[in-house]
Length: 355
Ligand SMILES: Cc1ncc(COP(=O)(O)O)c(C=O)c1O
Image (tube, rainbow, N blue to C red; front, side, top):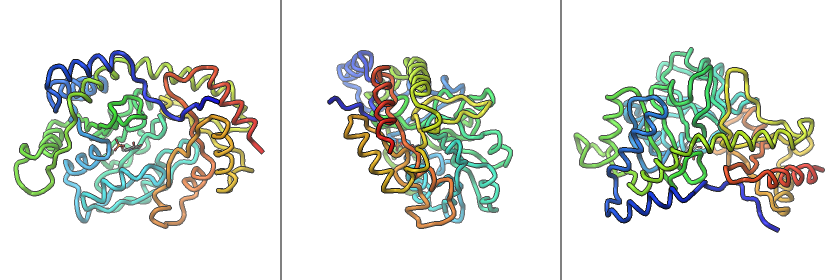
């Protein structure tokens, strides 16, 4: 039996060629390829510039530092997300205020953000989850600076605006499973030249104006930069392939059994993940785990889309939408090289293993 993996990077001959060229050049550390990748990402989003770093987590931390966020400040973020944004807030010495999500979209709920804000709220970290833009219009109306976290979403739009173009700062991740991958990597992008300059000074120790300890070494290498450019050239193709695969899943999975991903009007989806909800009968933790294991034994690797919601780590209560997502949402395999036959096979196994 061949296993259908949950994620697979789209690595092609172009990636191998450009990385080989970098190796041959001898310029492997941060250099012209990183600078070109930064310009390419900024042009893709229509922003003034970008600063490449070695991970999405670091990109969030440097974005917060550039805004001068520190002790006494608080930052709002959703519970239903990986721990990276929470850890970045901790590292700059600020307090994270965790809020519940909108159950339909898995994204931040602006009403809950409004209730959580205090006079010390400096920004909201807005992860666009699984490829679907958050309600940027609703969040913007609150008047709090937004840091858009595009680790999972590029190329999708909300009210005609691309994700990553609305916040004061935007962060990306180029981890191996992401829409655009450089193995590890991240970027901070903005239209604000001063903020970008501050991020640049923090990424490299001898570029910092002082020895205050915030500057570090979190540079991207030219090997990654070159791969980033090659991937960016194919990003449109990758997104088209993902959209076609998502449409196939929608045809192959009965909507009366699986709740398919919502796409509210005015938004488009880039299908970083194809997340479905299981029927009510499977939503006890044991049933859910047993189902995932049965499906996996039949060669289809599915995952919980968020390893553990933040409020569970923090032992906080009253996050009903995150709790429900945690026990009913399943992420199915989706990546450019997935085939129609594999989608049909995955859909069949998912149906057959329902109790
Ligand atoms: C929404 C979100 N933000 C930030 C990160 C952190 O990115 P990285 O793994 O590159 O540090 C991730 C994880 O990949 C993520 O999903």
